[in-house]
Length: 57
Image (cartoon, rainbow, N blue to C red; front, top):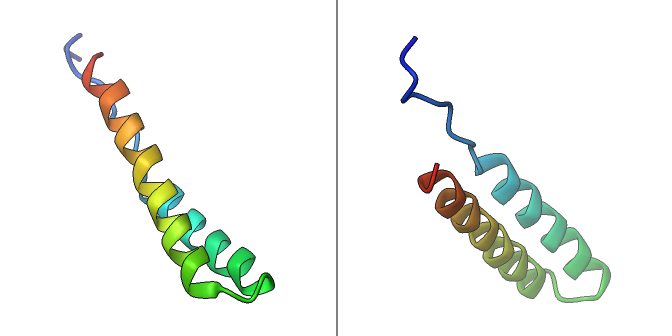
């Protein structure tokens, strides 16, 4: 194996879980659409941070 290769971290599951959690949490507060958007935004933010961290390695 070459030393330059590494396995990148996938963030699709994180995005999906946060979207679901946001929709459920928002639904409990009476605003499922806002929860869905907040969960999606947070998931994308975490995915972006993971990408930037992996890019530097």
